Image (cartoon, rainbow, N blue to C red; front, side):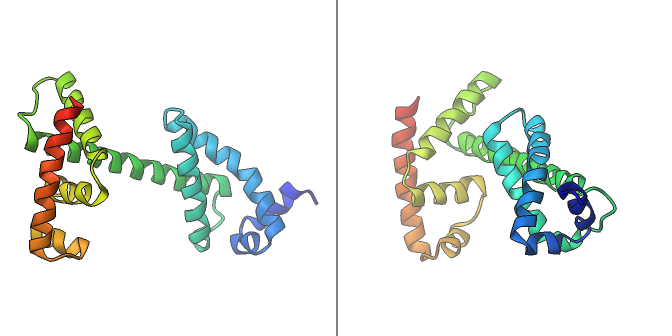
Length: 182
């Protein structure tokens, strides 16, 4: 019996595939290229994103292997998981863009045309990237996620007073670096 035939028969029981290292390696090596190519074509040939999503797909598939019922080929099932991972990625990216635009509007007059908005967003992203981690986090939580100081304090494990102080320093630092970005 060939490896391919053996894997097709065993694909109905992914627990058995995962349990045996040699079988898993063969299964992985046979399915990986098809899943990767599927995702690469759907994410604008962004190699880094396709690799990340492929990894997430296999991790999720192994975690949820009991849900594979054998009604389709295992690669079809893996591609469906990958498609969901890609959709989740786009949702997160869209939310991130909206969050940055809200922050930009909070700090500026919010330029009127698309070019100005793009430049503004790029400046805000660059300014945030130059801040220390804690300052960046509190600004994102406050202005992008629109959390109250109390909620931020609870999230980062500080008192409200310490959080207000950190937020104040973060605002000052952002103003300083944002002015130097443009």
